[in-house]
Length: 190
Image (tube, rainbow, N blue to C red):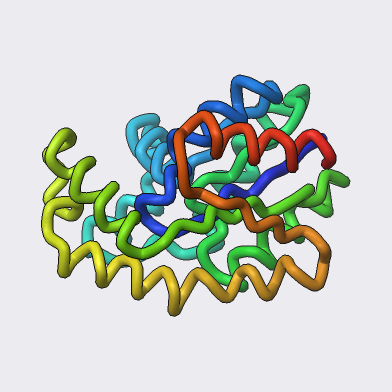
């Protein structure tokens, strides 16, 4: 089973590239944002638990998110693999994901880290903000803060996966097709 963590700062193109990887390798997409919305809409126990935190503007605890991921894995036992988008974001979350996947005998195959220059990230997000109407993509100071939070809180995951030989830095600059080609070349070797 192929389990990929798609990683990169806001604006790196994770959502766009996830679609290419899903299509190319027949993977199931696990987006924690989508999972949370789905569980809440379905009024599941985990969804109701998550909603309590979200209604207070708090982060959903890792245990609840891991429970949702476990439920998704359990309901897709015949999958060729999964692409994790937006999770893990911290080393503790990565350890919890490893424990869950290792218990299933299907460890993380690799962490694909899209590397994009800061100004390119800002430009992409500002452009996306104009077309999507997302307020957080229209204010450069908010964008820069999101990138800084990523660098402080999420970037350390590279040092978690690197000693396991599971970190793969991918040049995230250029056309969507060029980036997809680089990702596919790495995944094909896994």
